[in-house]
Length: 374
Image (tube, rainbow, N blue to C red; front, side, top):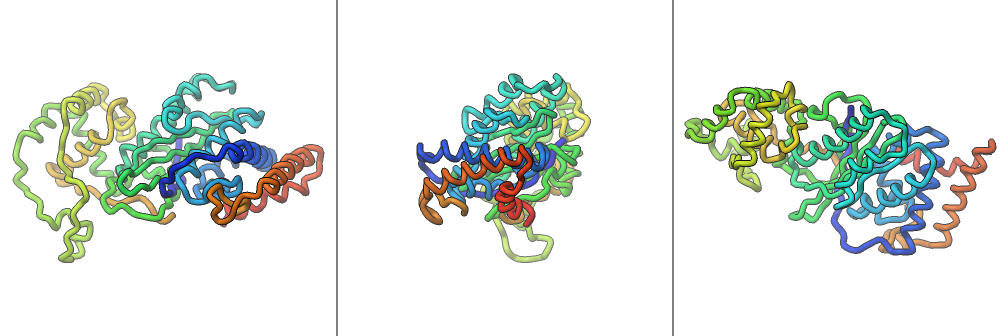
């Protein structure tokens, strides 16, 4: 199945990649990718893309902004064009904005000889990784970029990014298709960012297992019981201190959440719950996977579980913390185009020499290896 290996927060920057830079980024990204796949194999290449620190290092090496949101979209765009035109057994589907909505279609039209079941698994993994980061981890970031990198054996990594219009920050999410068996239960290996959101609803957390179990039970039970929950008054009224994350410490600090936790089902959500009831999901992942079940629905079910059945929601952002050629904005220094082109040639020649038995030049790739292992 999958695990999410990391998150990175990046400021939103305006502007586009210079025309002279992107072709160079594509060539250098292709040369580095070829060297990595040749030296370490497809699986290791996917693992590195799923590491937020290594991916950031790669973006710096190929010369884009070291810290802007475009680091993700432009680097993935360069990788996509490079990998899809090379015979490395690795391909990329999706991208930014409207292109992200073509991911499933591009998986269907893959050139790899994948079985129907593996193609369906890739499509399911693409859809679920996006759904988890948009709906089950409600941290205020709306996805606008989604790239699925997969190999000829059906292994995959996902690099996707969301935007917070209020803070003007983007958050990058990394996934990898190894080790974890449940999309809905702590698929994170590491989550990195600069800022925490004190009102994040993380429904993948084990601390919310009771909430998730009750949510599934609510859907599988008589759907009319849910309607009654909205029509009757809740007698166990909460105090302001109940909404303070530190209330167990007996502090007198009251922290108000930025938005009201008002249960607003609406006709569409009620219809989705009826659909879920008909399907009788066996666990929380099956519930979340139902088409049409979105952030409002899972949030509403979680709040009902807390207000009516006493299960306490854990509000916690699942984050810890988040130059070879310069940057396009001359930070930390301007890109030297001749030096950049020379690096591309060195990488290409290193791979060519390695194929005939001379691997000395491939030691250049060890700089990226150092970032990865640190």
